[in-house]
Structure formats: C-alpha cells, structure tokens
Image (tube, rainbow, N blue to C red):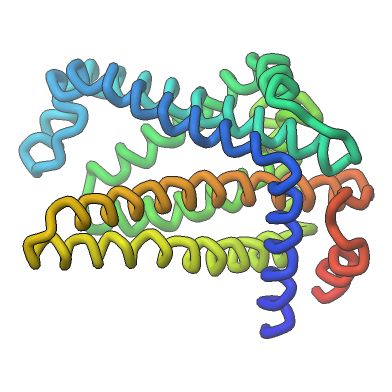
Amino acid sequence: MFERISMGWQLTKQAVQVLRLDKELLLFPLLSGISCILVLASFAVPAFMSGAFEVSEESTSQITQNPIAWVVLFLFYFVNYFVITFFNSALVGCAVIRLKGGDPVVSDGFHSAFARLPQIAGWAFVSATVGIILKLIESRSERAGQFVVGLLGMAWSITTFFVVPVLVIEGVGPIDSVKRSVAVMRKTWGEALISNFGIGFFVFLLSLAGILPIVGGVAIIGAGSTTLGGILIGAGVLMLIMTSLVSSALNSIILAALYIYAAEDEMPAGFDSQLVQNAFASR
C-alpha cells in the first residue's frame, strides 16, 4: 500500500515536470472553465423558466411531467459536455505530443480537438443521455435514487476514464471509445488509482496555500482591516483557481502517459522508464 502511494506521488512529480515544459497547457482548463460559465449563463433563464433546476419535492414531480424541462436540461448537458470534452481533448492532444518527444504549442491542441469534432459531439450526446437517465432515476426516489445514482455515476466514471485519449489518438466513435477505455482500464486500474491519490495529495497541499490566506483575510476583516483582508482573500481565491487549473492539466498528462504505455507499449517521454515499468509490474 505504502509502495503504491509513494509511486503515485512520484508519477505526479514527473507530471509536474512535464507541465513545467508546457505551461501553456493551463490555458485549456482555463478556457474550459470560462466557457462552462458562459454555457450556464446562457441556459439559466430558460432552465429556470422550465423548472429544470428546481429541487423541491413538488417541483421534482412537475419536472417529471414536463418534457420541455427535460429537453432544456438535456441540451444543457450536451453543450456542457461538448465544451469540457473539446478542451480536454485539446489538452490531451498537446500532452501526447510532448510525451512522444515533441514540443507542442497551443494551436496543436486546438488542431487535435477540431480534428475530432464528430467524435466529441457523439461523446457529448452519450454523456448527456447518461446524465438525463441518472437524473430520472434520482427524481423517482430522492434517497434511494441518490444512492443508486452515486454508484452508477462512480461506475460510469471508471468505465470512461480513458475515453478522451482514445477519442484523440484513435479517433473512434463513442461506443468504441468506451470499449477501449474499459480494456485499458483493466490493464491500468491500479496505476490510475495511485496517480489520482498522488494528484489529490499535491492538490491538497496547493489548496492549503489558497485556503489559509482566505481564512486569514476573513479574520483580518473582522478585526477592522478591510483592505488587507480583501487582498489576502483575493490572493487566496486566485491560488485556488490556479490549483484547479494545475490539477486538470496534471490529470490529463498522467492519463495520456498511462494510455500511451498501456495501449501502445511505448514509454512516455518525460517519465522515468523504471518508475513506469515498476508501477505496472507491482500489481
């Protein structure tokens, strides 16, 4: 167990080194976040008017009987998943170039994503459909529905873990991407778990650097120093945003590295060959 934890931390540190070579990768999660906010804003008015975002018991019953609300919610899911998958594909596209020994630029990422627009749209449709099905299950019985949705959502996340690199590299449709993702996941599930732990620990440390100034800023404002407190809170919020961007980039880098090694039997550049081999051999 401790050996796996240590290995996950080592994989994360090597992903950080790769990110240092291509800091522009942070642009993709930033644009993704901004785009998702714009999508939410554009759907907010019709969604609230249709009752799609109401969560009370009465409104849940109304939603179930209101097809327009479900259509609006499905369209929101579709556009949101499309945006997220598009920018994740761009990030993974750049990561793959770096991990195969190249020197990517931002335009390479956009080229990778635009080249896979039909596949991305297909995957967004599948993801939105699954999202609506889970929402339907949850709306039938709030307590039992939340439990079932939690289990199904976790299974879906594991099943589709490698879908984005499959879309980018192999260019197959959503169904074949899920099948390939499952095949790669079976081969790398241990490595995926330890890498997530390593990234989680790294993000936790970075988050502390953002949370502490916010807590200090609130305390200082309470003591009467509004300007200094506001500065600390602003600095903390910026740190948390940067932490989110770094976390997203690191996830994509390690995801691409594991996929390249597991699916193509190729050692990802920037990662220690002995470490990667030991990670797979240790299962």
